[in-house]
Length: 110
Image 1 (spheres, rainbow, N blue to C red):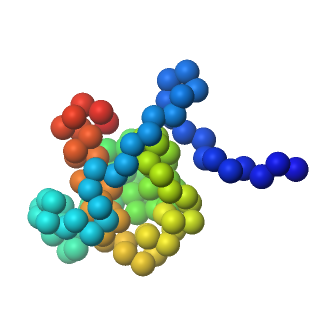
Image 2 (tube, rainbow, N blue to C red; image 1 turned 45 degrees about the vertical axis):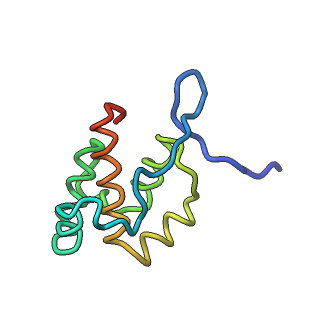
């Protein structure tokens, strides 16, 4: 039995795009509006993220959503790291994801 050592990704012709997060998980000053929303209204921010990704509102703050986004853009990491980050720093991770979405929209890469 062969273990899976890489995660599947999205891309054209079987090629996986590779990139990195546009901002760090703790770069709260990158967008104060998103930071405030994530701090005081995390469910609202989760729904915005899910809406951006054409998913159900209840999926925004999930490991599956972060993993889906990460694999779509070839961002290094694992399901385990997604789980740990979301468990330990849920608001920071939500803000990071929303900031990344907004930056990719600005670059017409979302």
